[in-house]
Length: 497
Image (cartoon, rainbow, N blue to C red):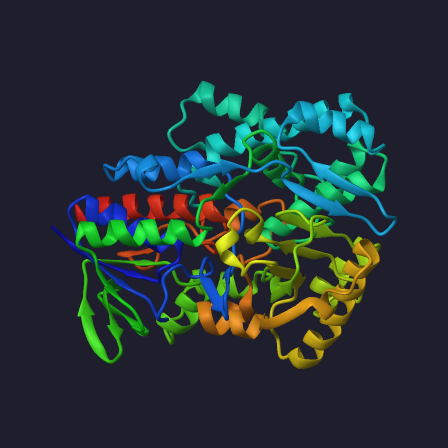
């Protein structure tokens, strides 16, 4: 039995801790706040409940595999319900489009709305499927350590086959160029471009490889978790307790301990805690700049040069009355998408006309809001924090979001707000330790983005492993859980010698 410390109780850290404990190791989980879940937290405000971060489950087999690997029957712990439609889109020209959670019905709906032809939808989804198949084989489900690891374990013939299929990744053009190549209607292109925000990036700079996300959502489906996303955190917490993990909340990890270049533990609230290995679910930049402060490394220098991802500005609104014109997931699009992403990534400010995402969990979980009310999670993409006047930004964005919703629905949501909480990039940074509140660590604006993300094992500091949204393979519920699996397996092999 080895002693392993896990820093951070986000989904990746929870998954890593559970897997390591199930493998028979002594695991201590350190969380700097009073709540588990990291970005996947929950907020109670008056009689309203909100998921604070992720709101949609995709790739449900990842959760199923995790619980089964822990010896549990997933049906005993989680109830997943397919979401249909996946999202309701509101356009400035008055178009309202419900995106079905099925390729065949999606093709018909696109045709009926005048957004494109069914054949183009089928061609597009086949294109996305090829990118997913290639990425799944070489990226998503195994650790990556530089371009050379792409071919690790492949014989000559398999390596040659992989080379001939690299074009399926479509990494030489942007998501926007690819999407515009399939569809002429700018509304359909905008709908598909918005998936770049799933990795905190701009569709005009993100490689078209990331159009694999559309395959995951439209072919694999989207799911709601009964009880909200935070129910997944509660289930994993129950597993940690069952497996004997020591969970320490309000525990500030101040620095990592090293001996002979090897990580041997951490200083937590002034106390030296020795471990045979450390899994950091903390933000990668935070790990290098704070937990390894004063210890220069090639990886730290490289990471500091990479462009941070976008952050978010979130309004949690308790809304009076029930509004049938709004679905569970809603997008209120801006009328100038290029300007929106220029503001985010070039000008470092919130857009003048932001696109707003509205998630209303009380549509499927009535207990999340009092009778006759709704809980609105209203999010816009925001730049990472670099000292902006966030009070001014909040005031300006609140007004612009309200105007955009009013233009589509005919009423001002501000007049229906009975309580409000606001989450800004600095608050995200403070709560999660993420650099500037960047939600996904680094932006995916380069062809080699998949190879630039922090690998799950440190090459320079033996005994240090990474998981979470800022590490490989990326952010979002399923990828964070997969990162926890990879980090746990690597740490397990390391302590086994």
